[in-house]
Image: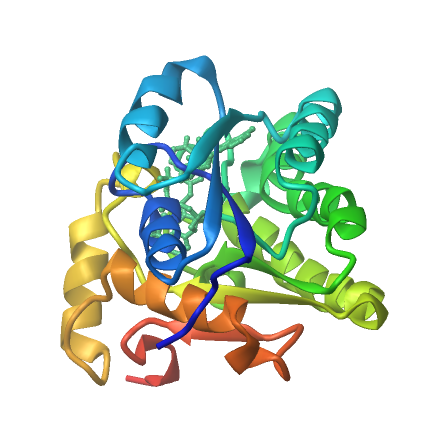
Length: 254
Ligand code: NAD
Ligand code: 0WE
C-alpha cells in the first residue's frame, strides 16, 4: 500500500461528488495525506465542506484560478496552515461556449478564457507551489485525448488541452532541478458536471465500450488510483509524462 503519511496534498477543482477531484482527494486521503481541497466560488462552498467532512483533517479553501490575488491568498494560507506542500492536483478546465463554436469560429475572448482557466492556471499554481515544495513534490493535471485527435464538439478545449500537455513538459523541465515532478493523466470520458449538457456524451461512452480493449468506461476512482501512484514515491522516476487512464481506447485504430 502507498503511504502518504506526513505529506500535504492540495486538490483544485472540486465541484461535487462526481468531480474527478473528489475521487483523487479520497484516494490521497485514504493513503494518509493531509488534504486541502479548493473550490471555485462561494456557490460551491457548502458542497465542498460537506464532502470534505468525510475525510478526517481535510480543510477547504476558496480560489478562483483566473484571479491572481486569489492564488496568492490561498498559497499564503497553505504556508500558514501547513508550512509546506508535497502534492498539487489541478483538476480544472473550462471553455466558454465550448459546444457552440467550432475552432474556426472561436472568438478571441473565448480562446483567451479557455486558455487562461485551463492552461495558464496550471503554470500559475506551479509557480505559487514551488517555494512550498522545498523537499520536492508532485504536480498533476487532468487532460483528454481531444488534445491529440479531433472529437466532435470538444472544439477549443482540444486546443487548450494540447497547450496544457505541452505546459506539463515545459514545467517538468523548469522544475526538475527542484525535484518537483509534473505529470498529466489523460482520462477517458466520465459523466461529471463538465460532461453535462454534452448532447452526444452517451454516444461517446458507447463508442468506448465498443472499441476500447477493456470494452468498458473508466470510473473516477480508477483515475484516483493512478493519481495516487503518480503522486507517490513509486513514481519518482516519472515526470513530464501523459498517462492514459482510458481502458486502452487511445491505442485503437478502427
Ligand atoms: P468538474 O466540473 O467536476 O470539474 C471541473 C472543475 O473546474 C470544477 O470544480 C470547476 O469549479 C473548476 N473550475 C472552472 N473554472 C474555475 C476557476 N476559474 N477557478 C477555479 N476552479 C475552476 O468536471 P471533471 O470532469 O471532474 O473535470 C476535471 C478535469 O478533468 C478537467 O480538466 C477536465 O478537462 C478533465 N477531464 C475530464 C474528463 C471527463 O470526461 N469528465 C475526461 C478527461 C479529462
Ligand atoms: O474537458 C472536458 C470538458 C470540460 C468543459 C466542459 C464544458 C461544458 C460547458 C469545458 N468547458 C465547458 N464549457 C461549457 O460551456 N472533458 C474531457 C469532458 C468532455 O467534453 C466533451 C467530451 C468529453 C470527454 C465534449 C465533446 C466530446 C467529448
